[in-house]
Image (cartoon, rainbow, N blue to C red; front, side, top):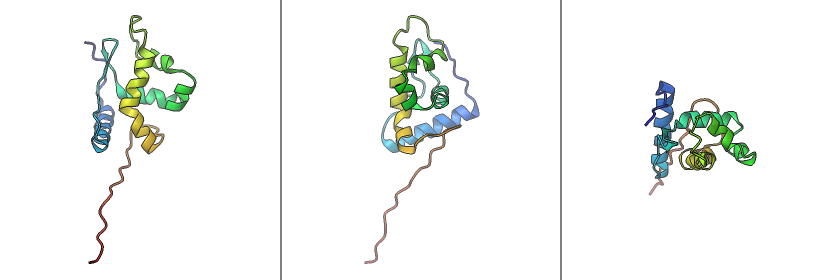
Length: 120
């Protein structure tokens, strides 16, 4: 299995924060999904989608195939655009809908709800 993920500090922080977000949501992060026999770098995917205008823009203009070209999937991986979009939705989509567009490294602004103590 090809390991095309460069595990920099920035990547590690991104995945850690993304995992924390999924824990808060009660969902499971697939941190290194396999596509075309390669581990998919979610941080690179996130950066490419943001640079292309965000999820809605990429989807509206049907540019998932163009996003996928950055990952050099084998020619036999004919449905890579469809799979890539699904991977994005499952792993990055909910966070973007909740927290809005983010440029640069992932920054999650957690809102902690604390119970209000009422006087008795």
